[in-house]
Image (cartoon, rainbow over all chains, first blue to last red; front, side, top):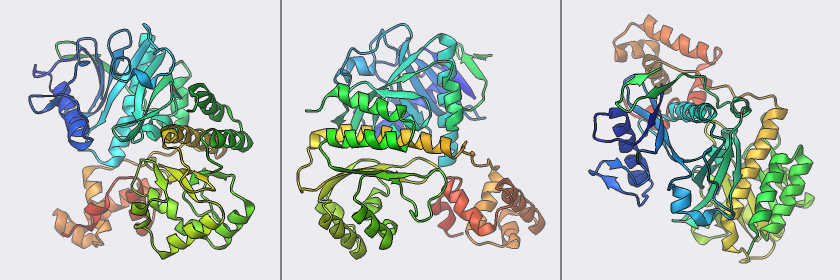
Length: 208
Length: 251
C-alpha cells in the first residue's frame, strides 16, 4: 500500500514514518556513509524534514516501511537550492508547481525483485500525486549509483547543469517534467503500477 | 572548460533522435565535445548472436571491429570485465585495474592499444533484470584525458544509453514482462531445487509430503510458462527472486 504523509513527525506514535527514518539511516548513513544528521542514534532526519515535507511511503501488509521518497516545495529551502546550487547552471527551478524529490529509499530487508516492485510503485504514486496536486516539475540530485535507474523509469528527465564530482561520485541535478502523458510513459517503460493511494492524516489514521 | 548549454543540448538531441543514424551523429558530437576520439556504447552480449532489444553502436574502425569479431574478443572484453560489480565510471589503463585482468584480457588490451585505443573512460550501466552494458570513450594518445570532463561524460553516457534503450525497446515491441510473484512456500521450494533436492527430500525438510512438495514446484514451473528445472534456476537468479548465497548455503 502507498500512503502520503504531509509534514514530518517522529517518536510520536507514527510507526510508519519512524520506520522510514530508521531505514534512511541504515541506507544513507550506515551503507553509503553520507554526512547527514542522525537523531537519537537511529533516525536520519535533517533540516528539511519539517512540516512542509511530503512523504510518499510504501508499506507491506504488516505496516512496515518498504520504500519511500520525500517531496519538498521549491519555494522553501530544499537540497538543490540550499546545499548544491552549483549543480544548476541557470536559475534554480522554483514555483508553486515545482517540488524537489530527495531521500529515495528502499528497505534493505527486501530482496532485489521486491525492491524493484516497490521502486516502481513509489514512482507511480509520485506521478499520480503530482497530477492530483498540479505539480508539473520535479527537481532532484542524482549520483552515479542511481542515475541509470532514475532515467530508466520512463519519465522525461533532463540535466539542469554540468555534473560535478562530489564526495567521489559523479553528481548532477535533474529536472523531471510531469504531464498527463507521464503515466503512459511509465507504462511503456514497464514501471507503472496500478494502485490505490491513501492519504494519511496528520494524526496518523489513514483515510481513503 | 566545457559549456553547460552545449552539454544540455547534446543530451536533448539523444532523446530527439529517431533512429541509429541520429544517435550516431549525436555521439560523434558528444565524443568530440568531451575531447575524445572514439566511442562505443552497448550491451555486453554475444555480438554474433545478439538477444532481442540489445544494441551496440560505435565509431571504431572496420579493421578493429573485424579483429574483434574474428578473434571473438567481445567474449573476453577486458573493459566489460572491469565493469562487473561497479557503478562508478573508470579511466584506463590504471595499474590497480590492470592487476585484475588475466592474460587473454591483457592481450586484447594490447591489441587495442596498437589500434590506437591508448586510454579511455568507461561508464558501466547495470539495470535490474536487464543485460549489463557500458559506454566507452577512448583517445589515440595516452594520458590526455581531462579529468574535469568525466562527470559530464558519465551523465551524458547514461542519458544516451537510456535514449537508445527506449528506441531499441520500442523497435522490439517490448513491454518488459515483470517476473512472477511467489509465496513464501514457493520460494522455499525454489531454493531447495537450487540446492539439488529431490521432492522427497524437500518434503522431509519442510515437514510436508513428497506429493505436496511436488505440487508447490509445479506451480512454480507453471508461473514461468512450464519452464525446465535447470532453466528455472537461471531465471530466478536473474530476476532477483533468489540469490546465490541462499542457493549455495549448506542445509
